[in-house]
Length: 457
Image (cartoon, rainbow, N blue to C red; front, side):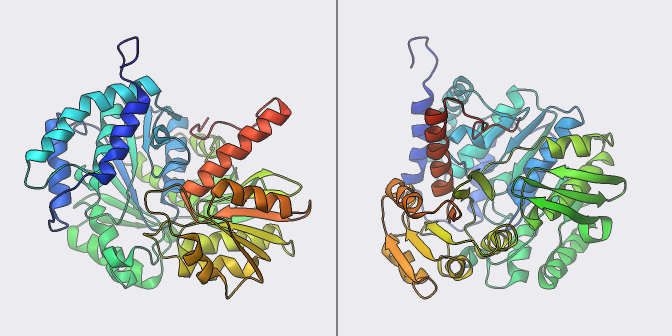
């Protein structure tokens, strides 16, 4: 407790993070949702009466969720947004009205939830996980703050993710590709069927452009469940008219023609994410959430979504990106080639051990003249020497520096003013590097021109 009697936020976050190391009984995967539902029951069903949108997919789900939230907030709605992982601070995962929740709020909600989490020790399914507790905390926050619409990013898969314990008004599925194949399946159709677990009978599902195999599997599940299948590729048309290092202009029309939209994110894939978010907002409007036409341009223009091909400084150009699978790394590669063609690239690269590292390495490493391989601040970091072996066939020069701060400093020391330094491979690496570099910039300039990592204002 703090001197005021309010629980301390550092203790609250420490408790939640500590759930990662707690042991649980070996059970079939289907027990996960049972465990999550038991936790929600003990918490008084905070999701009841709360309209929810679930956003699943392999890539772009966080960006799409953030865009949809920005549009709905611009429409005058009090929105909750739950995303994962965070860049720097746990509270970034839970936002209300575009801002992450206050430290005091998080501490109080953890204090409220903790006995109900611990009560799970007496259940056959065991103690709720870090991910289950985090989703439950978001729902507690949204109930307490009187949220009118909650947008939840789905974690691993969809069918068995903790967020799937709620009943969505609309489901959204962003592009699907190979990731977590050990858990989700080794074909796109199998992975798509896991993602399709968020589709509800008689409810709409908005589906982004997909590989044919994934599209067919999603359409089949929607038909089986009597869901309304809404294809973004059929509902919307979009064209990028201008791309810069600070954003892009996108001509977009769906049920309405929105004209030229300003999107403060780079990368062609983000235009597709914007189209998905707009079609989802239009779908919500038919479910009782009116969409004033001006909400789309105003919401998208206001978006601040850090760590997504984000340029932190120039001379040299320093970019942080959270890409950590093949699809997101391909999007990063394409953006680097489009916006900085011919520039010497220094890559600072780290990954988590539970992700495929060979595929992403094969995508991004061939662009680099120098790769500095390091390790993220994570409970399961991939050892830098192992990542270096995956990078070695593609890069003429490799340095192994396990200390992530030293690795970033080394890249900046080697970079010439015209070079590009790209820091990627993990949310944890990108987020920590972003916070540290912006703090250094603020200390030297006396004014931090960037917004805080958790802000979306």
